[in-house]
Length: 499
Image (cartoon, rainbow, N blue to C red):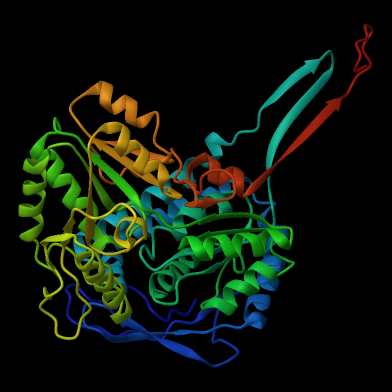
């Protein structure tokens, strides 16, 4: 197989250009039929490091056709043999763990340590796929004299996924291991802002022995997503992105008869009560709202201050003020991100909020990059945009409430239901909050309560459209369908209603 990217060569943040991304269809690199492309920016430097093709419906059709051609043979492979491809992929990813992290840091803008954590989580997702043959062993039982029922998990066929810019390697691997081990062939459209990690993954999958056509990569924007939703040859569709788009594509995919699961945005609430451990809370909250520059659906967005917690807020602000962009957290995606994030800060300040920590003037070392430093807004009105909208940046909005009842009511008034956390040293308070908040992923003294495999990732309400979680066992069930076979091989002397 010819490679267009290969192992990424950078070992630091110095600007490094790469070859333009291409579509990966039927085991071959292909340019988009339109010939159009957009720049892939390095957010830390604010300039183009590569380009992504803008594919049209005919490119999607080519990918679906290639996947359909590969499907008959692939689904005949025993599940354990399919999983062997993932074992080899895991070894390859381990072998270039650092290079993959530097690739993510360059195309996404996050710092190396956080990019490395993403690689490790992505490898963990692959490991879960390796374990699926043991977990998915079909049940069987003699349900009557001489009558046996057996369950197996069958592939849906050609399936598709669309993934966001903030985790270019990890989120695709929320989907691929379960879908591929389940016997499906996959068409993936990664974010056009970060196509390179998936270009490299396509190369690694081919090196790991995945047959041509089983995994296909089609880059593009909105028309590409719509073509995937509409294509009659695709049986299931998964999406991770903003709520507005998740709701739209969920309806569009379901309208064509597809099974769909679309994860949207979030406005996570971290409830802090006076008995919370000061040091633990300060460290944890700051890591939550500034990690990956706040560009993750699990980031802290609102700190709900219950009663007199000024001593804890002071510790949070002190820690956040010391953070250095480019060292402690990365750049934001583009100039539009800066404008959007700063707009929320300015409107909150104009509405009476106090800026405890102001990161608007902070910059990384590199000239021309896209930077917003850690920012904390205090006394934010519960009905203001800073408290209600997903800012998707390193901004923490503090909303003051008099008691725990008011804190839970505030959390539950949000249309989102992704994540919620409580900071306390009281088991009773923790249990009360965990049992009542409207969120699918909850934490006790944990600001980023991401469930690790085998537990599934997924929120509630306007944070998810469709049934179940996208990772873990739910993910495998999403990409497969159960077949029940009832058999009888001999005439019994005694009879039951099934005889």
